[in-house]
Length: 494
Image 1 (cartoon, helix red, strand yellow):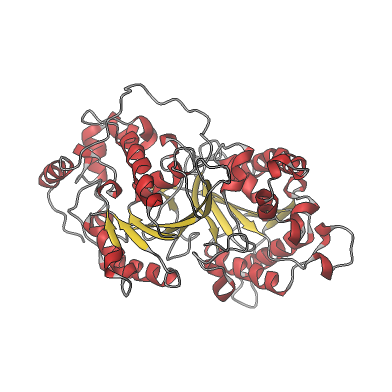
Image 2 (spheres, rainbow, N blue to C red):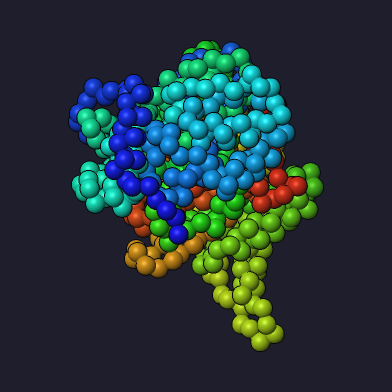
């Protein structure tokens, strides 16, 4: 049993600590209305050279373990579990030659940065006060149930409508978004091509969102777990102006992303997993006319088996897949492993997993052909090319595909339901944008590898907002995976 410090002194100490940080005040006291997102990178400074930034949240802290509201308090430190998580993240990032590490000055993040940075240049750690966690003023130091009991309506607003949440005369989430934009000015101004940032849950959410041009209403939508790693790629535009931005991957966690049953501290029983089909044989290796007939190659077969093994942590209810051969083969591998999972004795009866083909998950031959990958189409200027019509067709069908997946989730709050959708990375990029209520042009702002998975939770049911737990997770592929910060085939400059 944990021995917890009395809440009032802790809260008082946190209020004194919060006073040390100058807030970014909001001029408006009115509620933020949901507006169309700005284009990705709109608020970022121009770049002369490509840059990759890896964001890491600190490991588990003592106040994480106790269930206290931390905010920008510096009263908690890493637990032994948090230190171990940081050591795992160090191994995940060991192959990357980072040029610098920006870090929050708070002890729990600074210690995480020191563990990850061990063995590198001692002068590479750059503290930045704007990377501290969100300022939560009177909430800081309270146990979560105390915040609910003492603040009632205000606490509910923090939980349900954080962008408009106000306490002690401040709008913490709006202030945080302002700080995040300020941080990007300094991070992107650094001369290094590969930069590590070690900070906190809320501030890392704000960094990801502001880089993509998303407002404060996206708080708690892009999950950041303890020691989870997110990678952003920035490339300069030929004509100048703000850079292109791509979220290469979101929240790569030290542990399996499918094992946990909560999203951002909220219980969830509804989940959609976007599983990208394995790698297929190239066009030169097949004689059939349509690329949709391309089967998995040896690597793709391994990837599908690894994905099936990862999903053993879940009880999958249904698998919805594209009718194309590679997707069907990947889905079949997942289905067979799921149905055999509970069959430990000779007299057992295999569990039934529903498997269905969905025509709307099918992708055009242009996406299936290796020489016409989604990344190639984007990089070749698809907005003004013939491929734009192909992309429009894909985008239109993704609306029906997304609705079909939501229809697989029951409306009631009690029933557990896990749906796995299997298809080409291109259709999953469109589905991610549908989930986040983003326009088609955002498809190039996300990256998905063959064999990767992305996890979306629905703590408020299928009619509520989806919470993206992770995107482009590939750690389950082991030696066949693409390391978190290793260049992809389309961005060798990193």
